[in-house]
Amino acid sequence: MTQSRTHTCGELRLANAGEKVTLAGWLENTRLVSASLGFIVLRDFYGTTQIVAETEEMVKQFKAINKESTISVTGVVRERSSKNPKQATGDIEIVPESVTVLGRCRYNELPFEINHSREADEMIRLKYRYLDLRNPEVKKNILLRCQVVAALRQSMTEHGFLEITTPILTASSPEGARDYLVPARKHPGKFYALPQAPQQFKQLLMVSGFDRYFQIAPCFRDEDARGDRSPGEFYQLDMEMAFASQEDVFEVLEDVLPPIFAKYGTYNRASNAPFMRIPYLEAMEKYGTDKPDLRIDLTVQDATEVLSGCGFEPFAGNVVKAVVVSGFEGTRKFIDKTLASVEVVAGSKPYWFRVDENGEIVGGIAKFVAPIKEQVCEALGAKPGDFVALSAGKLPLAQKTAGVLVKTLGAAVPGHMDKEQYAFCWIVDFPMYEIGEESGELEFCHNPFSMPSGGLETLLKAERGEIDPLTITADQYDLVCNGVELSSGAVRNHDPEIMIKAFEMVRLGEEDVKKKFPAMYNAFCYGAPPHAGIAPGVDRMVMLLAGEDSIREIIPFPMNKNAQDVMMNAPSEVTQKQLDELHIKVELPEE
Image (cartoon, rainbow, N blue to C red; front, side):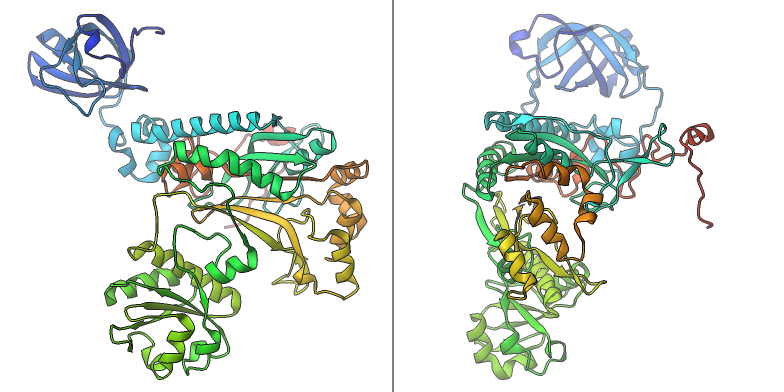
């Protein structure tokens, strides 16, 4: 072994009995039975080992050492009289001959108990993250992350992809989120930007003649935190393929991901290839979201025709959606609590009724539905014992609320969610354009550099008024797993003529494209191959594999929800000298 140890704290077994060994690690706990007997637990990265002090002098030495100090213990291995089957080293113990303090903990009180750090306040955990990571339960997520990244690298390499790193300091570009800007000292008044993604660079690699590229890429976006998104920075499995179609990208990821999820996941089942393909509009109608959780068997039905005229005011003139739940035995208290949580998430009030065992409509808005119960039950396929949840409003809001109902009721009502698996699907055929909420005019719906389905001819038909621009779909796709979007990808618009025409549809001309994306546009003018790619989020993948609800649990040193590193005190003020060198003057808004 290395330095001051012969073995690790997770290594010794009965076969080592009688050997003289040296262990090193953190003093996890000291239990003193008497002046001449004490039990000490020593912990390192690999596990724990029990030390038994059996002399007054040795007990005195351990008593003087604070918990979490790093120590080295030399002694003889012997068989334990009282074995611990739950511990890998539970058959043996060490009788110490000497103990040396390698790094003293100078505090009698810790911010939290190491083995219970996950119960502590999150801000305290983040401030003392180096102590939090000593907890084996916390550390195992970081170890899992290392294993998953290594497996991804190996699999991508085996599929013929080259790992190529792309620049961190680059130019600011409109990618959809706020850039992190870096002042350029040698170029006063100008700024670099940290890449929101290696998007342009990986496409330029395709133009450069590289056939298959990937990297575990750091990405930087100045955006708010969510449970499945870390503010500031994140990592993704970035990949791009030349002379490739959508199906080529699907084939690679459907081969790479399921074995990794099955091997490293909390659940040992993952979807086999091919993953289900669901058109965007169908996903919104059937699941109420473009991120469906296919572990849930509930779906959304349209009830507008049968219910909009029932006399219930919130339904009048609105789209009405229904979710029928069989086998429902929830109490009124459960219903009220569940639907209240749906309203908080969706921002819209849901409604309900039940079909009792006699086929009568009861509860909720029953008085409006009962007069037309036969039509309603036939239209929705509702049977005695079913619970029916409803949403209403303009189409997007009705769909969103119904989607939250599916997710919430599917998880809460027994028998509707096969939780122990990883269910993948592709969402395809995204709209190319939409009407902007603020502008009221045609705008790009998602990625402006996706290839429009049908290419130039489709755009020309829209320009001539032969088709509605809102019906144009893009060769864009999302990878979804268990209701979490892992990635967006697309077949790229590699043809300058098609690119210009696509931008003209939203009132931007060739000069606008050249100005905003000069390198990529110019490169495409030198002959670009058709290419496609995707970039699944590594952090989100590991979060799913670990079964965690918060992405911060699988990041070694995460920021808090306000994009602050409370351990390193970042962001922080800098000196006036540093500002002067960068030709920057700070003017703070008045409070």
